[in-house]
Amino acid sequence: MHADLLVLMEGLPASVNYRDLTVADFRSVRDRVDAVWSLARSTRMIEIDGQMVEINGAAEALAERLSGEPQAKRERMVGTNTQLDLRMRLAGMRAALRRVEFWADARDGGNTGPFRTYVWQPVSEAVTRYRTQRNDYVNRFLALLKTIEPTLKPGKIAAPELADGMVFADRSALLHALLHTGNESNLRKLLLGYQWATERPDGSFDTTRWDNFLKRMHAEKRITKADWDFVQATWNLLEEIKPLAQAAHKRMFGHYFAEITAEPVQTPFGELSGGYVPAITDSCWCPKRERTAPWTTCWPARTARCSRP
Image 1 (cartoon, rainbow, N blue to C red):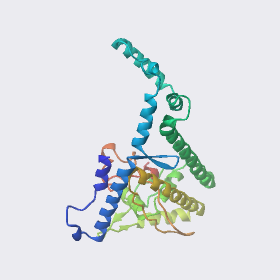
Image 2 (cartoon, one colour):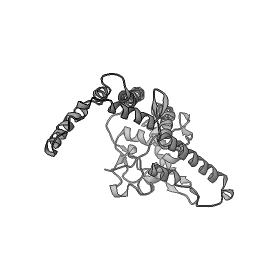
Image 3 (cartoon, helix red, strand yellow):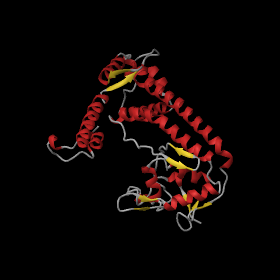
Image 4 (spheres, helix red, strand yellow):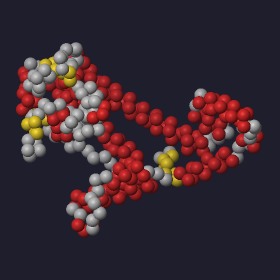
């Protein structure tokens, strides 16, 4: 809880009179106060069958059930220190091999009781929902991949426009790079991180080298309409997942995560609406000790990996 609060407080203005805050700062403070309030309440509640239940109430029900177990059963571990240690070790081995569901049923005496209701059932149902939704999105993404599967053949793709000796490992690496062009944040990480563009004094960046590379790829039909259709469909799929991710983030941390705004992408086949894909550190280009450095030092997006001959 304390660590979560520290995260929430990051970026807040220094201690000043609230009347002196800008509108943006005031809204930031308001959002964080709302997040702290929501987080404080959520840490005292659990959701059971769609209803919020006080954790203290659930704990009391579990304790009451344990107190109702037969005395002989609860005294089974009584003995000398040596005997108790051996029995505890054997019991630990048995517990490690036992399914939580069966343990909960045993604690409840074979009936549906507080252990199944508060311990087993919430986790089991959540895992089932997650797997169902995950499988749906994975299958839909696989269907998208099927549309370009015949073109995903081995073979390096030279990119001298970007840098001397620059080579994409294969078409999948090239497509991964295209996926990072749907918003300014990702595109900036891609081009400036790999030094495929230069930043101007006003903060904008010169994309001439990248533009020339794409122009040749389109002319040589290395990048086709089907490729861009796949890229936009992937962005759309991730956009569809976002509300679910936002809801989970809100429940975990008390606030919604900041969203990246998609920006239009111009292609020879028309304008795309753009989108977002996650960007993480390229472990091949970035030594482990530098992965916490600014992205301008090491671009955090290994999904668009390249290779040099």
